[in-house]
Length: 324
Image (cartoon, rainbow, N blue to C red; front, side):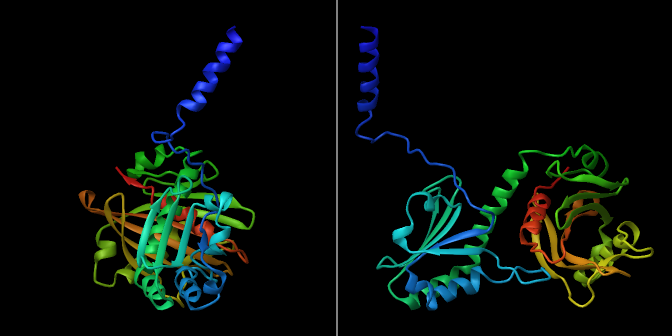
């Protein structure tokens, strides 16, 4: 009798939610490598001018890398193939012809976390116009999604940052795979070994006038970097040290870290007196209360290897900074 009652109870549970009106939708976890973007559109559209417009923007070279690498690795599939597990990719772009012209954002449509963007237009010309007009927004949306995912992965195993907080008033979330290589009262060098080289993080402070002494901000940042490199970052050979690559001026942008204004610069570093080099990302974060700039920098040494993902990881770490 007990077994019979249990069976009836189980069947009741199964049938009691049958209309589905109030059922929570179970969304599976998203997947995919960082910066891998699924593009859903017909094959003939992908090989034509609409596909070219997408590649022109979303596969454009990343700023500040020594070799050309695309913003996103694009993987195209026709709409009829966009089913099942193929819908689980964390970021996707869906392009189709239709009368409902426009661009729409979709949050966690098929998986979680997930960011999808739907673009619809009646003609190729309309689609290309929508892509061109919204390219910056599309790129920033997907990039922020990937940075957030990178930071989520980093948080799984965090290194103790009490030293940074105590001496510089900076909290920073970085993985236990990194180690403290050098530390003083106003300078920290943090390193991680990788199969093809190393990834490096610098955290230090400079008086506000070092960067704001005149209107040549990028020149002042270069001078600051080179001074720090000469003092703290030696090369492999005696007398060698890190400097900013003189042949290419760094890219300079206005940004924000922890709600504070920051100068963001990207460029190439090299070692004076040796054959070494690679990309760097530098944030000079204004701390008005203490009349200083907190400088957060990440750079990678990985000769003959791609560095996009290395720099994405470093950016995710640097953007996690909190100025205490």
